[in-house]
Figure 1: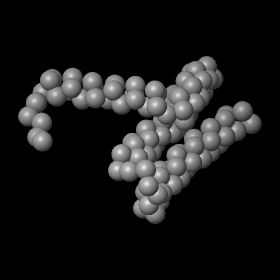
Figure 2 (figure 1 turned 90 degrees about the vertical axis):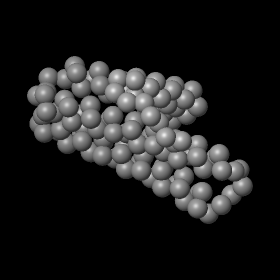
Figure 3 (figure 1 turned 180 degrees about the vertical axis):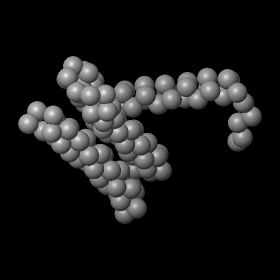
Figure 4 (figure 1 turned 120 degrees about the horizontal axis):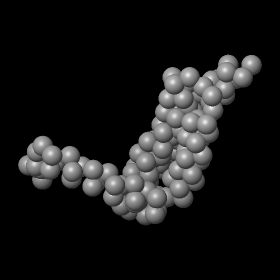
Length: 122
C-alpha cells in the first residue's frame, strides 16, 4: 500500500498520524500518562533552574528520551497483543526487551539529572 502524497500534504498527514499516536498512548497506556506527567514536571524544573542552555537541553532531552522509548515500547506491545493472546516465548521476549529499553532510558535520564545537577550545585 504505497502512499503517493508528497510535499505539504504528506507532512500534514504525518502530523495527523503522530497526533493519533500520542492520543492512543495517552488513552491506553498508564505508564505513558505517568511518565508524561513526570516529563512535564521535569521540563518545568529544568526551565526554572538557573543553568546554562546546554545543561537545560540535556535535562529536557533526557526525559524526552524516556517518552520516545515508552511510545516505542507501547507500539511493540500493541503489535504483540494484536498477534494473539496466547503465550509465546518470542512475544514475551519482545515485550520484556521493550520494557528493558524503557528502564535503560529512565536510567540515562536519572544519570543525566544527577550528574548535571551535582556538578552545578556543588
